[in-house]
Image (cartoon, rainbow, N blue to C red; front, side, top):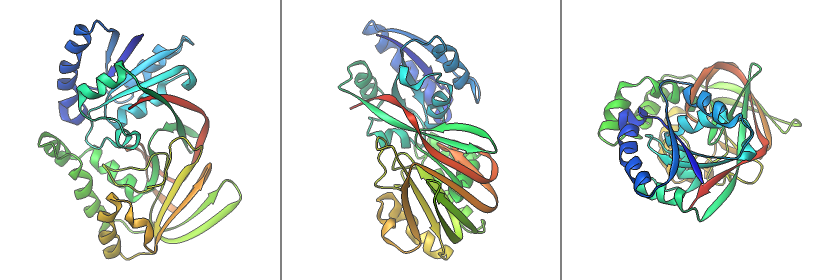
Length: 306
């Protein structure tokens, strides 16, 4: 088997490059047939993958990076059904690895990829906004959670905490800041084209393919990435102090038992906010939008898992 490694050397403030320097000698030691592509900027991974997969052949792709790199790779694949995906997590949030129950220690992740015990079919989500489409593996969201992702993308604090191996605390710190500065809005959500629900004072809405988001928040604890459905969470109608108290419980998924937390299952959700808000896919910022549509694709992708 020949492997195509897509390496983001800048993930986790340069940790990706150091991990690759540890991985490559192991590949040579095991006499693995591989090729390696280093990403240089935003969007580069998608272009690389587009070139690799455009030949219509089967490919085994291994991503070494964070959730954002996984997202770019997913969006570069020409035919999802002809790809097997392996993942060596090097990001600060690693929600994809957490949701797929993948090892986070690099050499253990490599060993799992080279000696696969299980290859799982995983659903793939699709975000549509203003006519533009983007796949996602973990989640897409609008409002408070997306605003956190937008701010984290340019945060100097994130760089510092990554160096201290405390990267996921970036999201906690920014969440506290955004909570007291962002005003909740009215919203309506249409599920599977026939059921519209209206909410007041919405902080955010997210459509999730995997249970975790934002560095370990288990926002949709029952989300299954192979059931052909999205789990949609809406947080609304709560005072800021209540949201602040609920956030820590979301690490365990306990928040879903409290009033103001709404979770639905569907194949497609159209989310409309009363004003344009931040949007993200797998933690990657998207321009402000008032309306988004999230759905599950018919195609799945094969992922190497433990």
